[in-house]
Length: 241
Image (cartoon, rainbow, N blue to C red; front, side, top):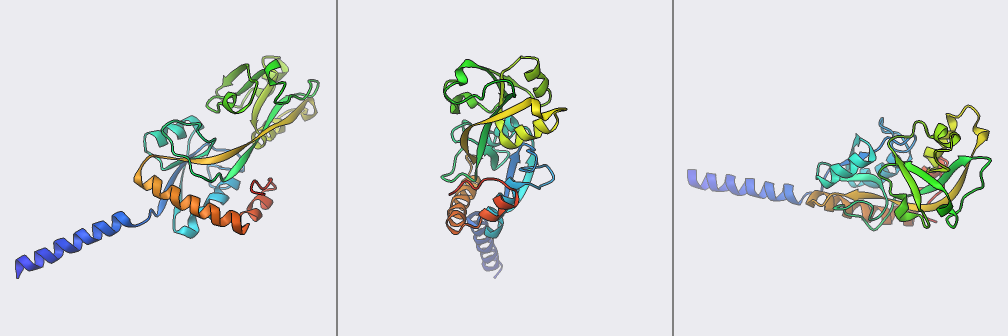
C-alpha cells in the first residue's frame, strides 16, 4: 500500500512538473532605456502601452528593468532578461529578432538653423554625432565621419561650438533636447529615415516562447487596427499603414 501510494505521489509530481514546463510564460522580463514618454522608468509611455496591449491579453505581465541601451543588450546576451526594447533588426549579436516590429524610429538630424538641411545623399559631407551603441552608420548611407557620445547632455553646446555639424537621434529624443534650448529657433531638425523597432529576444526556451506569443499577437493587432488608438493618444505616426 505504501509503495503504491509513493508511486502515485511520484507520478503526480512528474505530471505537475511536465505541465509547468509546457505552460506558457506568465511574465516577460524587459530591459529598456528610459526614453521620455516612450519607455519611462515609471512605466508610462507609448512603447509600454503598445507592449502591454501585445502581452497582457495573452496572460503575460510586463516586468520592466530600466538600464542604458548597451546594458539592455548585454542583459539579453547574458540571458538575464527575456528581451530588450527598441532594437534595430540585426543590431545586436546573439539576440533573436521576431518577424514583427512594434513601432518605427523616426530618425532626424539636429543642427544649427543656419546650416543647410542634410539628406541621406549629403550625410558624407558632415561631422555627425550620436549616442554610443546606436550604430547609425549601419543604417544610414554615406556616413563617413562620426563621433559617439556617452549621454545626451551637452549636445546643444557641441553644435554651437562647431564640434559636430549634426546630432542624429529619434524624433522624441531630438525634441526633448531642443526643449532645453534657451532659444529653440537657433536649431532645426531634418528627417532622415524610418527604422523599424523590434524587441530583441534572448536565446532561451522561455524567450523563444515569448517571441512566438509576440509575433502572433502583433499579427492580430495590426490586422484588427487595435494599436491605432494608442499611437493617436500619444500623437505619434502609426507605423503599420
